[in-house]
Image 1 (cartoon, helix red, strand yellow):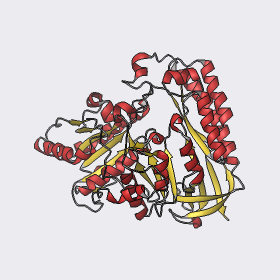
Image 2: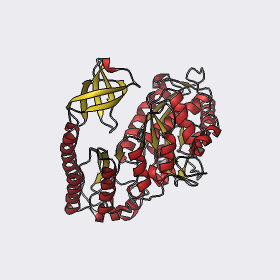
Image 3: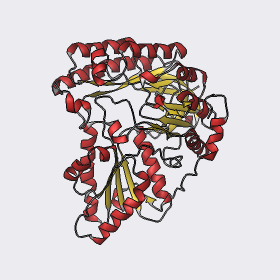
Image 4: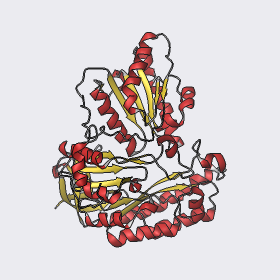
Length: 471
């Protein structure tokens, strides 16, 4: 396979992928309801599961009280997300008392991470399936539902399938099923090899493996044919992607050749793997959005070393400098984790200093919580008091809000190309879109419909939203 981005080999490969299973949005079989928690990869997995179940004759419903099968696709990255899932599982279990034969399942990362604990905290769950078990989901559901029918007077023993698969990339599944009709997800990499001390992902999603380029391109074409305008390429460390001799930059350029797709995003990259060829692709390919989400986690070398992030603050600064040199107007967002094991007041101050220096457009900001099974949970004391974690987090949030407000304010008076994504949930006379730099824009509903590109003049800004009018 050629690694030359100008070679049509990657595009040709896309035509030989296995056909996706048929969807069945109008099916008359058992009705399935799915709730999703966590990252965009979970959203993409839910879309895939919907397509898989649809192909097996399941019908969809957006009402849990009408469903024969209720699935919760879960996240294990943070304790708060797990607590929400447990609470929601208890709520949804009430439908099993009201309607005979309802199956309740927990799927995804939390299923893999806390298989035994789930029984204790959510005893009414019938099925637990990890993120490598989705091809077997229809068979698992059939077995679970048959068991429930045979023994409707008591809870059936739950079925568990959380086996990790070193080769599973769900080739032939996914595509244009689900989503908002404007921006679609394509998973190009599953698992992670980075082994950060605080992260459960390698344990719940297994080791890193790239999806075949032909499969990525098949899904991108399917999205285009369904009318989608934007593709978001997903991976735990997406720019670490490799498939035989195909690099991430080669894949980016190949996806940019897909007719009908006008914007390409990717998340989340890893700083160490942000190579010159990837930066050149962003700078030279018009369809590649001029926005990068680049997690830093901490501004302290001591903390980064303890986290096993494999880069220093200076390394991170160089990546940001290279991006801004190649693409001067690029928007950069980040992740920041505060209160990690052993983090001192000086470490925290260094994070604030880095934020002031690099001036991220936006950030996801969290306080550290132990994840069972990680190196940090097993070997490092969680020694920053909770009240201090909260105080540090509030300082980080306050600083980022100021920086974000200034970044958004700099767009006022400019003309931005906006892709309209949806109607506003707050006002009937407005629509919501995004700029190339991933900033939300509120426009009057006369601007257009979801999927339209419009040229908008930015009239005002808050720290998180732009407001515009048509030119």
